[in-house]
Image 1: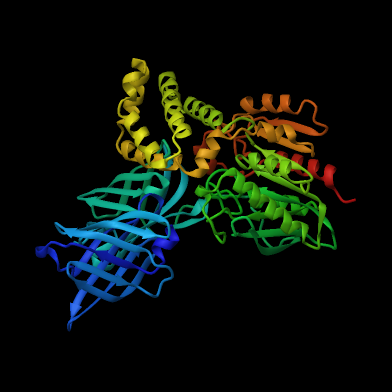
Image 2: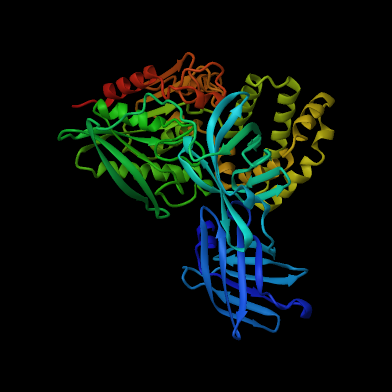
Length: 578
């Protein structure tokens, strides 16, 4: 929907306009779409020499402008199009009280749009680039950047960069500057910023709230960002060959862009497919300035094992949408990667395995249970329980490590159980969202007083109400619905190829004490299953102090050498050169 909405032919139909408000000429500002597809936009219409002309400008990763043709204003209706774009999304609405409101239809999807008469945006005073980072206390956790660019009709395009996650130009979907108070929203991420502009507009400081986490965000006018040391990252020239490849999941024609690293020589070589964890990840699984999949691929390939790593759906050079894909879809993606390797002249088709991190630790075993072409499975922090069980354990572990009160932890889980019950029982997303919102208004009255008080204090923090409403959209996506109910036990029990499961003792996202007993039971009769927990390592397999995600960026180590060595030796023992 996002691409169709923002990069397609535009047709606007406004019907039954009041006689006193039939002239649409001038500048309009507002939004097109809703949820993940919502974008800010500006509309220009002008009548000159008896003819209409105009343009529409969508404020996305950049300013996407389309000249309008075939503009007609008659009998209270307006139609126009921008034929330079593919597709034909159609708009219908009304003009009243200096607002244009209606519905846009593209393919089978319908979404709202709304415009008001444009006035200069006060945020133009912030034009330029701002760099800094997210902070937990005085420790920078993640570098960040914001860019404010003047746009047509006196508007401003605002985009966000996260260089440590290799993400650039994320569109900001709401901007509100009033005096020295600034509010920004990225609705598709469920993220908001509320802060203050320093006198002279030299710095910004406030709170970034996303996914129940609140961190300080501090930025100054600049064109550079603080750099972190990542000593493990390999530097060219490499002692192996690197190929950029593409392949497709034939089921839905999704195209994947990937990197294949090959040992030098004639081969054929054993090979591994790397499978990322939750969320939109690039081929290096970049997080907090770390690129663990780059480190793993480099280490394995230096030791004679070819490695394929790909951008997730909708990331980098890959098509599709990760939030509309389920684990079943991801299994098909992994098997498509295996097929690419099987056809490569330097790969031994009988010695191809999969290595999955976190949620990828679900995908790998499920793929192996559906295909005889997978020779081994490695699970890196792979859960052995359902998504719902993981979410409860993750929340308890992170909250406890963050010194949250027992009342807050117990109350949070009680609320989550009620919300998840709605998601499981209500297949219609709109009705599920409405039911959750209705329950949220009354649920505190059903909890014990200490839990209600703890949650009420947290929920009343600035920006939390908006952030909560935004985050609900994620919980009704196909990805989250499947994750919530998926039970990996049948696939894990069915595994008969060699399998290695590695965990970090300090992992708070997939706590090993929850999953390792389950794996020991399921694999009690497995002919070749190894489970190992590394002391002192976190979810990313870094040596850590608390295991909290806020530490990830500050740790220079990307992936513990001991974990790399154990994984490499284990794979070579099973599928080394014959």
